[in-house]
Image (cartoon, one colour):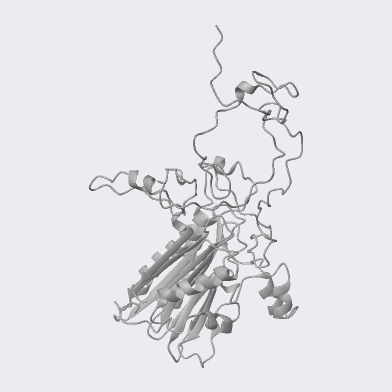
Length: 439
């Protein structure tokens, strides 16, 4: 005996070709579509991700605008690969899939969906966690659904922020903020802050900021390893009486070794990406003591000096390891011409196993007045390149509110377009007494 078809509302037209149907038809007379395969209409609206992706699937990239002029270029000049925007028109080919009967010539769906307010009934039904057990993560978008182990909301399908998408830290008188930005799918920057004492008991503070090279493999791992290795070296060397400039040099060497070690993988680890560059990143750091300001760097991340008295001129304290900087230094172009060239931000120095050579740059300064040291990646200085522009973007009370000031600078980059990851550390000079914090 044949099983009966499930009862459902009669169809007036074929769902495949729109041909009118008669009562009792089991197959479309025009296209042969099996009408018994039509799923029952759900009782409620399906859950849809904010951009139309099915919940639980990978979060698709937002269509990109034309490539930005300040994107960091690969160590050997290879531009990072990327996905272009999806075709605006319908999929080319037969409008009906013979396998499923699904039409592909439907009108395009909107890029974004309006996020509905959370259903209070859903919130009320969420069980309270047992005592001593952490409550389940709640979606940052709908504020109602629980976040599954795969990082997506069970209610609205929204992908949740990852730990490194936005990071903030305040350690004594210094602070730093790092943000993924508006275009990148992950944050490949990293930073480390530290406070210690010199042998004479005077305080020393430092900030290390690293920017992963996007065209290399594991750039986020490279930046994190480099920042941590450099910080560990400074925390060891400074209390032992090593001169801060020498300590900075040793910190960069240690960071380079840490990144190089990431390339020591089993032969099978990179078999799917045999031509990918080894993990790589840039590094920039600053050490501040009561009388000295030390900077060190490899790559195109920068350090700026902004006096507390804004009537005094600010200054950039580092020189980029980049194609544009080399052209200017060689006298082949002026700065405006060099930075207008599409090759301007191709870096010529970085940390990584396939770097040409390690050439740490360090410099020592003795400012004659108080101020603030800004340590940042190009995700910020692309929007405040000149020292005067950076000083204008920095709040006047940065020396006493470093975390607030770092947030303001990151916001400045995001307001400007946020084309890259953004990381900035704010370090007051001279170093305040140990234990002093922001007001």
